[in-house]
Image (cartoon, chains in turn green, cyan):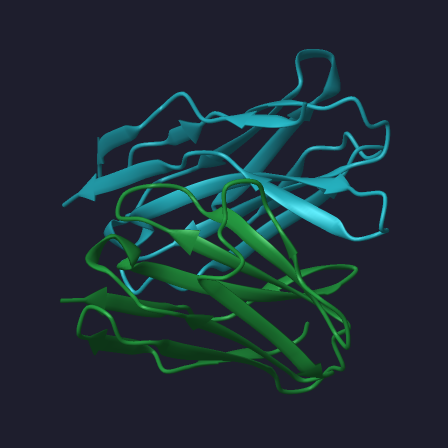
Length: 112
Length: 117
């Protein structure tokens, strides 16, 4: 299967700052990537579908101006949490699609 | 609408016991895929199995087995002779074909399994 990496693994930031999370496909060119958010002891919720070279498709209730997604190459998608607040603290997981989804190891974001 | 229900929030068993994790799904698609993932405390999802809607054969992989029954829309997962290392959250997921041709996943709420020594 495809190998997906995420960077950073964890990040702590102050309220009001922006944080960028990278999702890389190490061995496969991914035209489609997905971003999920998982709050503690909850399920994974799809935030958006990231399409290479075009705008991301956001799920209902996800603020596109707050969660900026850029998929500029076939191996990299980035999620930027702008003006982060404590309620944005969560585990963010990306995946890429190649017949099925292959998941990254996740990024734990803590906003103080 | 597609939906995945894992009614068991948390299960505790003693080591060596067998345990079954339930998964019930709803979909209008005739072609779909079902998955089970394990999420240990580290958070990284570990793929366990993928089953397409046309393959109702039960599967066994070591101590793991899966029972897929379309008649009851269930895809249950059994761990035989559980071990402490099996302690994790287990997610059942359904893939949904979208109009754009991608397959979105819908996850159940997960079942937290605790295996006690």
